[in-house]
Length: 250
Length: 159
Image 1 (tube, each protein chain N blue to C red):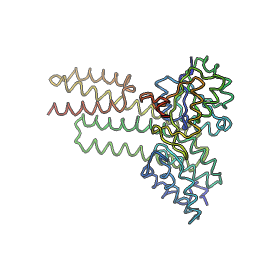
Image 2: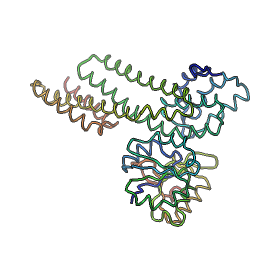
Image 3: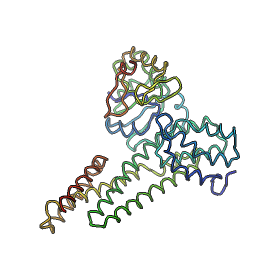
Image 4: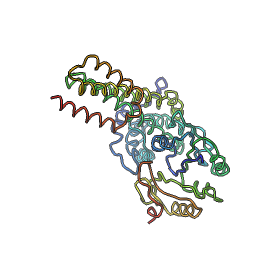
């Protein structure tokens, strides 16, 4: 029985917690397949399945499946909702097959392409500003994970609430536009960092007016072109430059 | 020539296609050729979720797509044609529909009866036969998951 007020089926909390280890058995054949089935178990048990029946049900969720781990909960929630509503296995398989590619792409762009680099750059900027080491580390962990946890929770509850129609909701949320915004934020930080680097390396003697000028120029460059430069390789480059400069300044 | 890529990929519209090939080829339009999908709108919506703002998608049956091949090629939009199976691509290639064109193998995954050729391409007897028929239709075939990776020729895949 689903609680009609919240739309949350019994066992939803253990299932949500299991989502944190959904990648634990990632492999090339079924990818997140067995992890997905593992997350379904609490929901299936609380539906009163046991023994052979439970066995069959778990098996039916083991098929190849891949998505961004933070967004896999959206599919899990939707499937739980669909099963509760009596949707047949074939439609559920087709749903999973259709949504996984989109979620994989959206998640990669939003998290690995925008959120992770942007929050790391934030930590780097704090380091540059002279904060003691525990502050950038702490700020990074807190900021990154609050976004991470919010996304997991949002996806899972959207899935539970909307079932098969969750696709329309996700479009409404405009994840790709959000990615763009985070991306621009990261580009801005990259600009500030570049400015700070240039100034501290080449104008240590007279930082006053030159500092301001270079910082503003770099800020503009970052704002205009940073979105093209904000990739994994750039990040590594920035880290290396930072390290070298830090060593050079000792 | 406006179709910039023909690709066989079970995942159809997904990250590698949209993020990998999309920017590289400046893709504006995707044509998904699949008899089942062409009739189920709710599934199409789910595939469309993965598209960037700058691109659109159509879902056609093999027959519709075969009839519109030259129209797609003449259109100004830079288009990618995607099929889930080798068989659907065979349908497009009928009556020299794809003669002289290149077909990209991007993802055929593990299933009973299929063996691994490269980590993202598993082929069974039906797929091998279909690819040979494509080659016989004058189509050039190679496997490559992303624009930056090395292309693997059909000979190497079947050898």
